[in-house]
Image 1 (cartoon, rainbow, N blue to C red):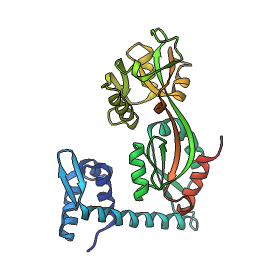
Image 2: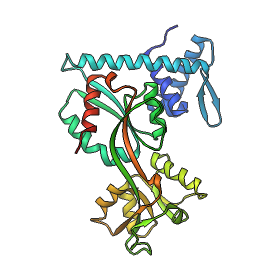
Image 3: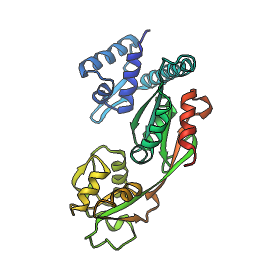
Image 4: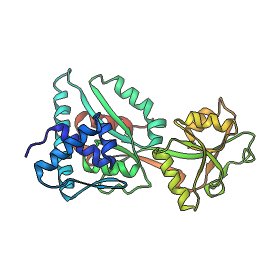
Length: 295
């Protein structure tokens, strides 16, 4: 029974995405090529590895076993690369880092820039995911380090504090709410929103809390960045919800007003997570120390 590393990486990407199409795209493969590789794996084993359904694919028990061992193999290869990187300046060390929307846009850019600028032989594979997905990926070994919110159960992962992320409502300064400092999400959930693009982890998070409150968020338009959301809000297109750090940055140049949400879930404590910090390869340990260091 022989699989190459491309097969193993593809299979993990498909399992994590729950979709052959999306997994193939992340592996930079065409759909026919990816499908042929997956069929080849099933033929070698003699068992189906994926169950196809209307909502995507899920691993069979045999598929779970393949995914488990694939993660171990790929993690060992990454550890080998990290250790060899200590002895060879020409070899890149690779860190797989997953983060939620706020961490990626508001807290990581400057910290990662400083870290990478001083380490030319380190690459970081940074991807945006929901905190629940990050826990699963880190626990399963398909990511080295993650940044998650305290709203999810980290299971057996080790944690270190990272940052506090507060979500605020942004409105135009001409809005009827422009004199408020605090507001409950329930009081604005029925308004017309300017939101993030479909599939954004933060937007999914807000949609989930809207559903719990008995609402379905109505969007006039969806944008790719917090800056573009604030710009739309400033022109009275709708209201938006963004991290407080973003609102403070853009209200200097835009006619917007930010209002803190009183809901407990709107204040999120972000944490760095790993299976065991001491087991990370040296450069990943350096990254954790850098990210968790006080400002």
